[in-house]
Amino acid sequence: MTDGWSFVRRNLRNTGTTSSTVPSHDPELLWQHDTEARIFGTPLVVGDRVYVTTSAQAHHSIDCAVAINQESGDRVWMTASEATEARGTPAVANGTLYFGDLDARIFAVGVDDGTVSQTTDYLGGSPTDGIYPLVYDDTIFLSRYRLEARDPESFELRWHSDDNCCFEEPFAIADGQIFAGGFRMTGDRIYVGQDDSDLPSFVNESEPVLKALDTETGASNWEMSLDGLPRAPAVVGETIYVPTAGSTPQGTRVSVIQSNTDEQPIPDEEPAEYRTYGSVHAVDAQTGTERWTTRLSEPARTMPAVDRDYVCFGTADGTLVTLNAETGEQEWQQQINDDKSVLSSPTIANDIVLVGSDDSYLVAFDVETGAELWRFKTEAAVDANPSVVDGVVYVADNVGNVYALGS
Image 1 (tube, rainbow, N blue to C red):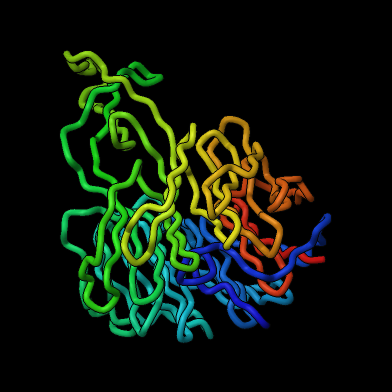
Image 2 (image 1 turned 180 degrees about the vertical axis):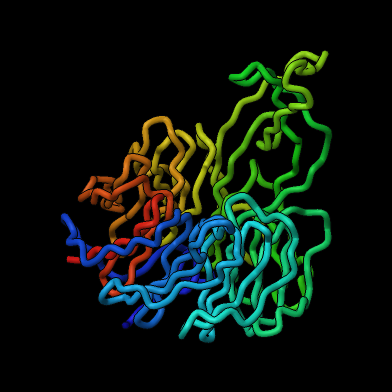
């Protein structure tokens, strides 16, 4: 094993890239493992095992964390049956698998046998897309609406963010700083018209921001405003890349009031004009100074995959977009899903981009030209993110199958 994939985007910088080669033509299925429950996150590969967490409900007799033999595809253990839906991606460090569930509890599981050694308090709810822990400098960092730093063994809280900024997306760590995108609620809800069921819809105004915090103290080093609610940032060299989902009025959180299904109240005011778009920001990691911004016609939906040449991400209209990392100019785009958001965050492996599709495929593209190289048929839609280790591609589908693909 010459390379591993320990965190959601492989490394602390959140790049979603690797120098490992992958098949340039139709791959071979090395093995397929059925976990029996949906997988949202990234398969992690550490040592001779593959680790995934699943969205199994608490009332099902299916455990949330699964370890698979990396060579054979056989199950090694399953554990943490008291967890309720793990939608994010776990982290593996120091012989421990860390993951969070939709009750915002964090679990520490021994990688050897799956024994649960520690859990955090019950908060009653986590970000919709799940929790994505990172382990750095003998500290586990979490985003449970606020950023937290905890002891990795006792889970004792060391610090947390407390400036009324809400964090729901994965974050990156580089050079002793956490780079996290969040937002503050800045006003009342705005009526934007009726939905498909003739119910009034509202957006909550928000102030999107990108923050740099000191990993030891949690103190804010700098903060900048963003043109839309941020997805996970990635750091390459001294530059942070962060895609966003923008809207006018600012904010994308839509909620429907249903106080009485027989007599639905309708606001008196005229609906405000509401439109969505996206953007990608390139920001200096030391100062928070913007280097370039590219406006998109659709909101960004996924975490980016970034190397020194390209920034690749999916959008709400089902498109995979690749920008020039130096200038922000578009290099190419490919339609992945028909009128459905790309939910699988792409991975760049050497000179190939891998991404899952809603029509039950894992698709590979040439990173320079956007030419499709191959597609592998899965049993269900692929919302999970692919990982690549030692020339083998690992990906999961929405009914719980984990696939290992090689030359």
